Image (cartoon, rainbow, N blue to C red; front, side, top):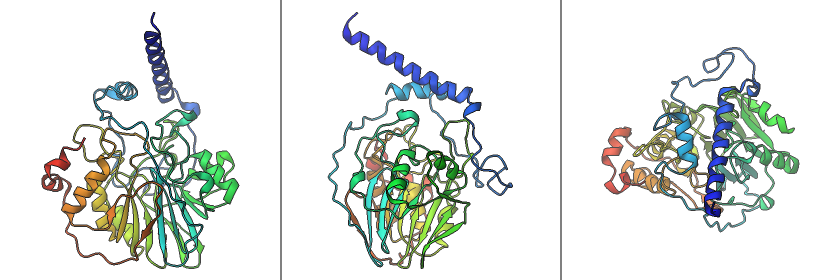
Length: 389
């Protein structure tokens, strides 16, 4: 047997072992189920599990014949996905230690991790510095290093954790941050139990819950449309959320990880005051050819609609180009976002380079923008945008 054939056979064996492990976790996981939160039923909690009150479309339906086939094709890269680069160069610029007053600086670290500096506070969203996003180090690997090396990260005051998926809740990073900085960690119901597994305290609130950070600054936990799980069996035992950070110079909105649902979560966030900066996901929306949205993830079309509903004056597209989670091309999200924003007539919403501190302009009320339904937007987009992989 040739060495090449041996290596290929070994790789296939390892892949089947991974698939078998995933299936075993899915089928026989009662011991992995955990009740992270207990409380009375509400409009989004059954007394056992959380749910989306605007509908149950929170699953990514595997294309081409079920989860086993989907997982196999994904792991073997035989599903027709466009190639991604193995490595993306990052040229970071160290952020300032602090940004005082109403000046605001945002630095994209990667995926949903953003450092926002204003009012003398350093605010970090869904911090992930690990190399992979998954249990036991198994999962999608980064194609780009963090835009800020952890050792050069300024002292963090506030951490926002949107939900318990591994690409958003990285317990290793949260423990490092807690041991180094003792930040206020704000999350939604049940996630404090997961974070507490590594000895890190956090403040868990229901949608609409608020916590003061300092005079004139508070964090509000707000609704979005998603789901949660660490081990499949514990599905929706903890709540998912977005956040509004109320600030004197205009609010920060962090969408977390979200599908469109009814999109009224954006209108509800806007009710807390003018949104100066919106951090909105634009990637992991394509799981079949030509798809523009998934139940759990918005793409650029819905991100632009959310931006319009928020009445935001600046926005950064996140949740793309770090971990390969779906079928669109590496740079499809920013290219499609630019095309959609132009057709929709919105301004100030785009993407930024990893590791480059970006000055956020003072809040200015945007002019009126007419809504464009998703189907109509697809008809209006240029052919070049629709042909993006």
